Length: 285
Image (cartoon, rainbow, N blue to C red; front, side, top):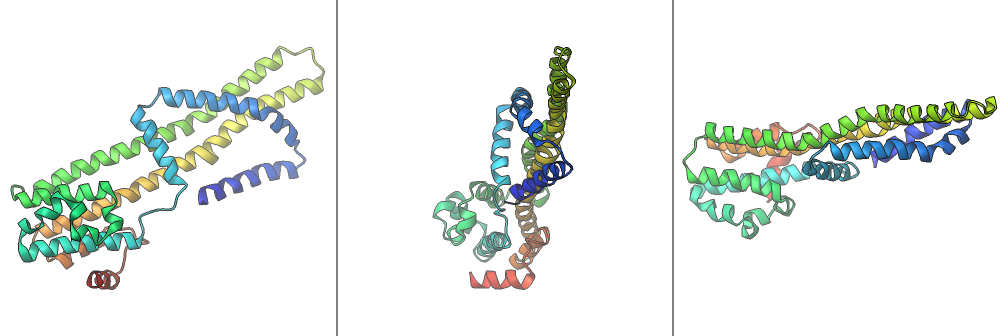
C-alpha cells in the first residue's frame, strides 16, 4: 500500500511541476510507449540473462511481499515465544525425550497446534524441529549447535539477499538503458537533419525522454523496491535469530521463562512485546 502511495507522490511531483512550469506533457506521452519498450525490454532481457532461475523466482516472491503488509507482528512473536516456552517447559518437567513426538510430527502435536500462526509456517516449524531434534539426540553441545545455526542463517541470508542484489543491479542498469534509448533517438534525429527546426526540436525532445525515464525508473521505482525487499529479508531473519537465541539459552541451563526473555530481546523494538505482555500471554495459553 505504501509503495503505491510513494509512487503516486513521485509521479505527481515530477510531472505536476513539469506541467506547472509550462512543460508540454504531450511530448513525453508521445515518446513514452517507444522509450518504455526500449528500456524495459532491454532491462528485462539483461535481468533474465544475468540471474539464475532461483534468483528470478526469489525476486518474484519478494516483489509480491513488497505489496503486502508484514506478517511479522508483535502477536506473531508472542505466539512464537509462547510455543518455545511450552516446548521447553515440557522438556524441563518430563525430560527431552518427552518432546520427541512433538518434534517428529508437529502437525499432530498439541503444543504446535495451540499456535496455528506458527504451525502453518513450514519454514519456521522446520527450523524449530531440526534443532530440537539435535537437542533430543544429546550428542551436541550448545557451541556446536550454535555453529550449525550460524551456518544455516548465513546460507539463508545469502539466498534471500541474492534477490535484493539482483534488483539493485537492475536499478543501476536502468539509467544506462535510458541513455541507449536516447542515443537511438539522436541517431534517428540525425537522419532527419533536413527537417524544419520545429520538427527536429520535437525529435530531440523525444530522444531525451529516454534518459529521463531511465533515471526516473531507477531511482523512483527499482531502487526503492530493492531497499524495501532488503528490509523484508532482515525482518524474516529476525524470527530465526529469536528461535536460535531462545534454544541456546535453554541449552545453557536457563529456565524456560528466562530463555524466552533472551529471545524477546533480539526482536526489533516495534515487534517486541514487553515482559509483562509476554508473561501474560504465556500464562493465558
